[in-house]
Image (cartoon, rainbow, N blue to C red; front, side):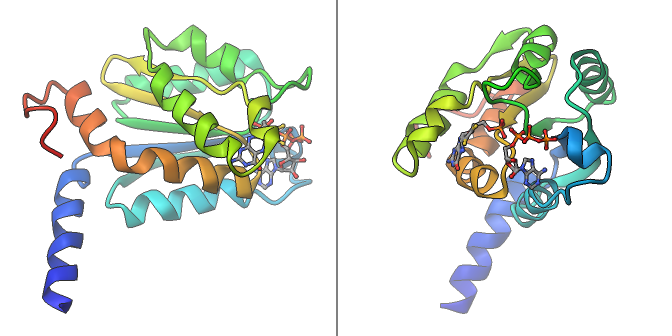
Length: 179
Ligand SMILES: Nc1ncnc2c1ncn2[C@@H]1O[C@H](COP(=O)(O)OP(=O)(O)OP(=O)(O)O)[C@@H](O)[C@H]1O
Ligand SMILES: Nc1nc2c(c(=O)[nH]1)N[C@H]1C(S)=C(S)[C@@H](COP(=O)(O)O)O[C@H]1N2
């Protein structure tokens, strides 16, 4: 039994360990030290447990140009998976999706739609997240909402599809439909 669990963990890690990730927390209060960022560290822990390698973590203000510059920097340094948290809502200061759209070359609407659909089963407020996702070069960028609860409920939706997504984005030729 234990051997079986260990084998499954090893198989999972073998699929993810070659991929790096970065977490970017977008929060005005967080960037000023007025709010503890609990969502960013949670996401780091969660993705590390899945076997991904942490490349970068930053807390930034909700500022369009700063977000674009940071995302481009991470893409250019070859980070495979970039997860943002915060700034996806309808408030005037929420600009993460607009900044992300400026960076991505190909949108992955299914990822964001899946998160919203699953989240709607938890709270009607899920429809307020305008988060988007997409690919630039070989980097996948995914916007998540900002609260710890929302970050947790959203990341768990995409985790099962991430290894296959990152493999394909990196030119993987494995057959689809086998897992
Ligand atoms: N990084 C974070 N860590 C923990 N909780 C957060 C974080 N970001 C947001 N939250 C929570 O989620 C709520 C909604 O996030 P939103 O991005 O709209 O924040 P906000 O009120 O505009 O403030 P700010 O952007 O300065 O964090 C916040 O009011 C806060 O309770
Ligand atoms: N699963 C899930 N999705 C969620 C929520 C949540 O609690 N759980 N909160 C929503 C709320 S209240 C808002 S305003 C939007 C946007 O959040 P953000 O501005 O922090 O990015 O995410 C939504 N998505």
